[in-house]
Image 1: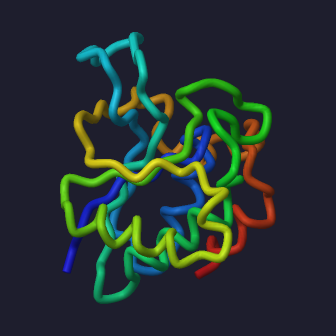
Image 2 (image 1 turned 180 degrees about the horizontal axis):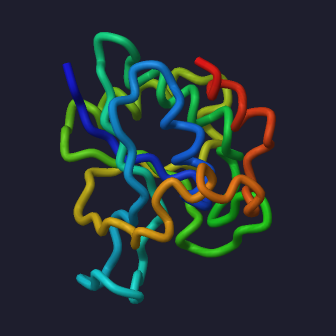
Length: 159
């Protein structure tokens, strides 16, 4: 069954490159989530860089996807991943599906480090697709900067 969830993990280039190669991923799209402006252009006030992720829940669960997200982020950092600093680089899990929100919150609370985790888990209030230049950026330009270690980016590419 296809489902949709949005993951923010710092710069969207690396997050998209990592997630699109996981088993059960149907499609990914670079974008921005939960901002305060309604702009579709350069004004992304309050938005988090994210990746719209469509997955087959018969192959991979939401909880497994969250575990993968935690492989590539520092879940204790506020508004920073690697050298990327600012509100748009915050970490988060967003969905229109309230069941996803409840499952994500419960999964994080089950972690032994739950009291230190700063990943926001919220309903998706708005979403803007990123410009074409940001779609599949690290596939097209593999030497561009990314905060995710290169070995993690390559871990699932061959599958």
